[in-house]
Image (tube, rainbow, N blue to C red; front, side):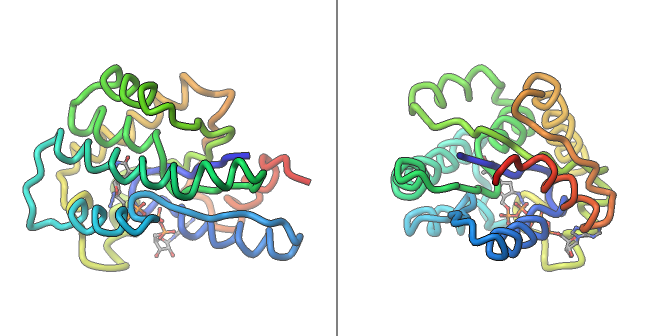
Length: 199
Ligand code: Z5A
């Protein structure tokens, strides 16, 4: 089973994934936790470029770096673990690309769909979308560290990303579980646990 977590910056993905790690440990459920960008060795190098706010990447340079990272991630980590019947949990995956590059950078949904099909990427079985207002997400992210290249974008960019996620949810309600990320971390995890459907 392949599960992904999605949402704007500061939506609480890392917090919930840490809860999930503890939950699985308690239940002795084996799972592989991974994230994008940057989980493979090559991906780590790509992540440094993608998040460097001193670099002025063009939209397509950014898009192809994201897909270069994803290709390594899928071939080295996701596919082998899914083939071995492990549960794989990724912090961000294809919905991030639709939201950030497709909508945020105005590349378009169709273009991105074509690349995903061509790459024959495994699709998630279930996705948790943590949704909250942009102002709150950025406030939370700001508390943590200096803003990276994405976080430094204008509010309008982040609003486009959030709206795109909401649209993707409307079109994929069979796969995506949307959770109000303004709730307390414990309440959010209760909803995740309820929707996991894992014995
Ligand atoms: N990107 C892309 O453009 N296209 C793609 O296809 C992919 C990625 C795959 C990776 O960033 C960047 O890559 C990302 C999009 C782009 N943009 N940015 N930036 P990253 O990996 O560095 O970070 P992130 O994925 O955006 O996550 P994040 O900013 O680290 O946030 P988070 O993991 O969702 O949140 P958190 O760390 O769990 O929580 C943030 C703070 O809020 C923290 O202080 C918590 O204690 C607090 N928190 C958490 N939950 C709550 C609740 N419920 N209430 C109150 N406070 C809370």
